[in-house]
Image (tube, rainbow, N blue to C red; front, side):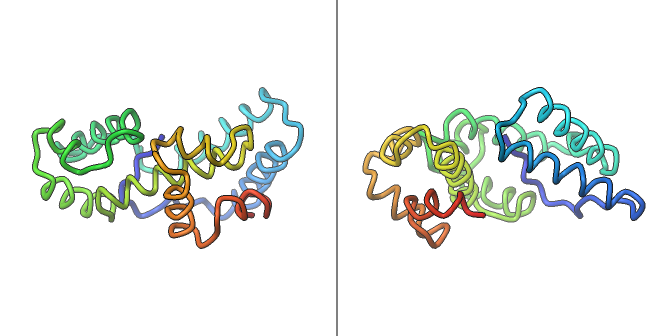
Length: 172
């Protein structure tokens, strides 16, 4: 789902800015309309292939700490709905919560709580965007036992309620 390591970004060559922007616009357009899944997949694949080509390989694990972070992110993807403490993830990796937060601050620029909140927010926005589940169902799906707590969490993170986010066109 994500590997939020700090990096210097990707530099797109000047001669590719216009074609790259066009490809991005095609992805957005295809995603907004009655999209053809195969076409959307092809556009997205081309987009990612170009990004990968212009970057240092972002999937290369360069150190023991990077390997731990990959393992941490895999654990988070599996357990973020039911385990939201640094202590749980630290125990899984044989580290202390303090050490996990130190490594995360260095590698990702945020703490475990910030990272978990970001993951929950991404999933909440995804659920609101697709509009299949009610807000209450999204809250329960994300492990919130009280939908009003989910609404407070969402508003604190985004500045708008889940209802307003859904109503105003998914945050555009």
